Length: 471
Image (cartoon, rainbow, N blue to C red; front, side):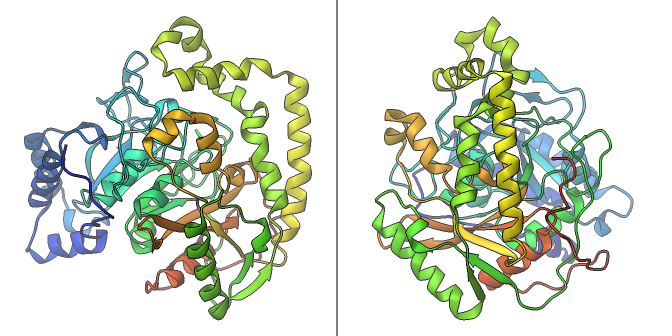
């Protein structure tokens, strides 16, 4: 394996790849060769579980070049990776569990949209087994590390998707996010992780972790790349019972930013992370309209996820495999799945009623703010620290992410730099369902990216209290 890096080395953006292909300085085939060589140079570092062989990848790129109107395709020859819980026809889906794996007979619609737009499929990226974890260590394969070195965890479960972008191998990668799986590894590797509103991207062809909460998300190097990829991936799919249409575009004007009181922020004894985040908040307060918002109802909802019956939902997909082949499952994942048997129907209804109460409280918050800003993670861990305390560390990593899908929020993890001791810190922007474009507009402002108004339907007034379909 290649030596560890000390931060991301983001490669060409989607726009830059497209410009190269259009201008003749590059081509999809040349890009394919570059990507294959970059992956080979790293060796088995835990980023990929499978890749298209070099010659086949170049041939696939050449086939894209021969498609009618190829140069007008929105992702013409742009390479990407797919988390290995999402199906690609003819490719083995493993979920980081060899005995569970199968060869997919069809491609997930979300991935097919990318292929139809001219994107180049490179391979399957690594993950915590069964997408159960936020740390990247729960795998029988090579345990990945953060690009920041120091034996820091990569984060998970979408560990490989974040790394593939942070290493500059692909401009974007498809991930998932049920409880933070697309935001935590983005934070730990210095890339953008965007979890859209649930239902905007079809989850057909995704092996579910918790089907009622699962989201397909995007890792990228910039907001512009996220915008370009979302414009291709978003679309109603009547085969997905949670599918819904995209919300209104950002109409412009000031964005009201909610900030929790400092006393409600927890950095778990990490003073450097606290200092970095508070400095970011001070800078944000100078340019934004800030409203103080209590974080308590959000955190109360988050506590329901793994201290409540939602863990039992994983048994819908994996219960039979757990019963028949328990020794094939990673020990930590196995115990988490087994804990789902301890919940009753009464527990489920009690939790659902409590969640509905918290949704009502949080729903009223959006009458006063447009975006809530919190840390993405409160601290970082090494691989050894996580292996020594796998459940406790994982809980800490999800402190600010667990409540997102339970409350039907969208989220964007933004890389902000490094702490004084060289570790990454990240802010997370949260919005009510279907306010994706407003969150992305603020994200672009924070990252100092130009962002032109996005095309789409006229902006409408959306009341988050009533925009709760498919919950």
